[in-house]
Image (cartoon, rainbow, N blue to C red; front, side):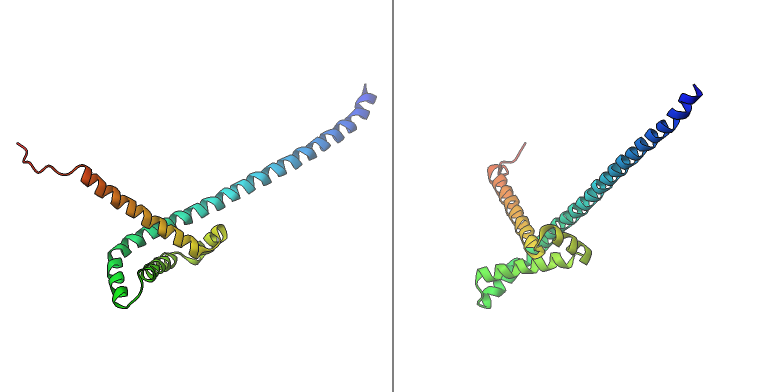
Length: 154
């Protein structure tokens, strides 16, 4: 029995070491995959954060420019500019304002994610303007559909 144990033990040890090596290799691969997935999720979360920041700043900018746009358009008309040129200037001002509110790191992350950052911000600004127009239109329609009653209530 000792002879069997003496001859089988080295073989068992070799098999256990080989299995241990395979297990370690599998574990390292699994940990690399988990690490990569976490890094991608972190990068995605960072991009999402900056996209949300651009949307919020664009909305604030559009709201703040809403009051000055009429003045700008009147001035442009007096200066002889076309309506299209005047609106283009207002849009450029909005884009510059949004970009000025973003730090360099945010601009780099977004540019890597979306490509042309200027065009992207312009699209976001236009989308915010459209949402505001739609919201204003919905308010007018709601007011017309439900006018306040002119008869005094008892």
